[in-house]
Length: 99
Image (tube, rainbow, N blue to C red; front, side, top):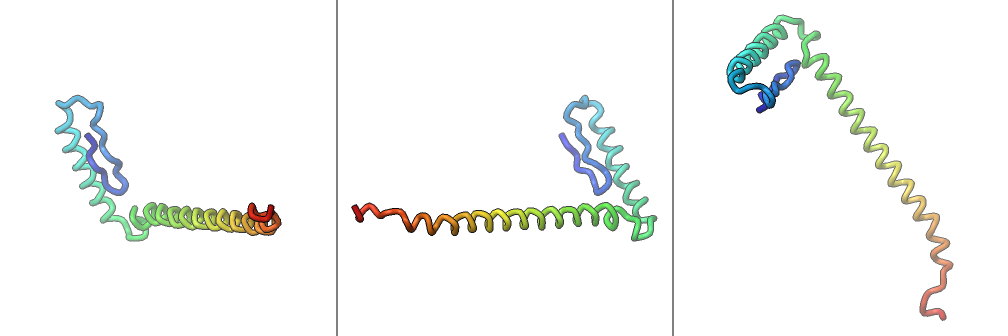
Protein backbone atom coordinates (compact mmCIF):
# COMPACT_ATOMS: atom_id res chain seq x y z
CA UNK A 1 0.00 0.00 0.00
CA UNK A 2 1.33 3.44 -0.91
CA UNK A 3 0.04 6.62 0.73
CA UNK A 4 0.46 9.70 -1.47
CA UNK A 5 2.88 12.38 -0.30
CA UNK A 6 2.72 16.12 -0.85
CA UNK A 7 5.27 18.36 -2.67
CA UNK A 8 8.36 17.99 -0.44
CA UNK A 9 6.99 14.95 1.41
CA UNK A 10 7.57 11.69 -0.42
CA UNK A 11 5.01 8.90 -0.70
CA UNK A 12 4.73 6.48 2.20
CA UNK A 13 5.32 2.91 1.05
CA UNK A 14 3.80 0.38 3.47
CA UNK A 15 4.43 -2.63 1.25
CA UNK A 16 6.83 -4.44 3.60
CA UNK A 17 5.61 -2.94 6.87
CA UNK A 18 3.68 -5.10 9.35
CA UNK A 19 -0.06 -4.41 9.33
CA UNK A 20 -0.18 -3.51 13.02
CA UNK A 21 1.99 -0.44 12.28
CA UNK A 22 0.01 0.89 9.31
CA UNK A 23 -2.46 3.00 11.28
CA UNK A 24 0.25 4.73 13.31
CA UNK A 25 2.49 5.34 10.29
CA UNK A 26 -0.38 6.76 8.21
CA UNK A 27 -1.34 9.07 11.07
CA UNK A 28 2.30 10.25 11.36
CA UNK A 29 2.51 10.72 7.59
CA UNK A 30 -0.58 12.95 7.59
CA UNK A 31 0.85 14.90 10.54
CA UNK A 32 4.14 15.37 8.63
CA UNK A 33 2.20 16.75 5.65
CA UNK A 34 0.27 19.14 7.91
CA UNK A 35 3.50 20.31 9.56
CA UNK A 36 5.12 20.76 6.16
CA UNK A 37 2.22 22.89 4.91
CA UNK A 38 2.38 25.04 8.06
CA UNK A 39 6.15 25.47 7.65
CA UNK A 40 5.79 26.42 3.99
CA UNK A 41 3.07 28.95 4.85
CA UNK A 42 5.48 30.69 7.25
CA UNK A 43 8.21 31.02 4.62
CA UNK A 44 8.41 34.05 2.31
CA UNK A 45 6.85 33.26 -1.06
CA UNK A 46 10.21 33.28 -2.86
CA UNK A 47 11.52 30.46 -0.61
CA UNK A 48 8.55 28.12 -0.79
CA UNK A 49 8.87 24.72 -2.44
CA UNK A 50 6.46 25.52 -5.26
CA UNK A 51 8.45 28.67 -6.09
CA UNK A 52 11.92 27.10 -5.92
CA UNK A 53 12.21 23.36 -6.43
CA UNK A 54 8.96 22.96 -8.33
CA UNK A 55 9.85 25.80 -10.71
CA UNK A 56 13.27 24.22 -11.34
CA UNK A 57 11.69 20.83 -12.05
CA UNK A 58 9.21 22.40 -14.48
CA UNK A 59 12.04 24.29 -16.20
CA UNK A 60 14.05 21.06 -16.57
CA UNK A 61 10.99 19.33 -18.03
CA UNK A 62 10.55 22.12 -20.60
CA UNK A 63 14.23 21.94 -21.55
CA UNK A 64 14.02 18.15 -21.85
CA UNK A 65 10.94 18.39 -24.08
CA UNK A 66 12.58 21.04 -26.27
CA UNK A 67 15.71 18.90 -26.61
CA UNK A 68 13.62 15.87 -27.57
CA UNK A 69 11.81 17.96 -30.18
CA UNK A 70 15.14 19.23 -31.58
CA UNK A 71 16.52 15.68 -31.75
CA UNK A 72 13.41 14.40 -33.55
CA UNK A 73 13.56 17.27 -36.03
CA UNK A 74 17.28 16.65 -36.68
CA UNK A 75 16.55 12.95 -37.20
CA UNK A 76 13.71 13.77 -39.61
CA UNK A 77 15.95 16.11 -41.61
CA UNK A 78 18.71 13.51 -41.68
CA UNK A 79 16.40 10.84 -43.12
CA UNK A 80 14.86 13.34 -45.51
CA UNK A 81 18.31 14.28 -46.84
CA UNK A 82 19.30 10.62 -47.18
CA UNK A 83 16.14 9.99 -49.18
CA UNK A 84 16.83 12.97 -51.46
CA UNK A 85 20.36 11.71 -52.10
CA UNK A 86 19.01 8.30 -53.16
CA UNK A 87 16.46 9.68 -55.63
CA UNK A 88 18.93 10.34 -58.49
CA UNK A 89 20.43 6.87 -58.11
CA UNK A 90 17.01 5.27 -58.08
CA UNK A 91 15.93 7.14 -61.20
CA UNK A 92 18.87 5.65 -63.14
CA UNK A 93 17.80 2.07 -62.43
CA UNK A 94 16.16 0.39 -65.40
CA UNK A 95 12.46 -0.26 -65.11
CA UNK A 96 11.29 -3.87 -65.43
CA UNK A 97 9.35 -3.06 -68.60
CA UNK A 98 12.51 -1.71 -70.37
CA UNK A 99 14.06 -5.16 -70.95
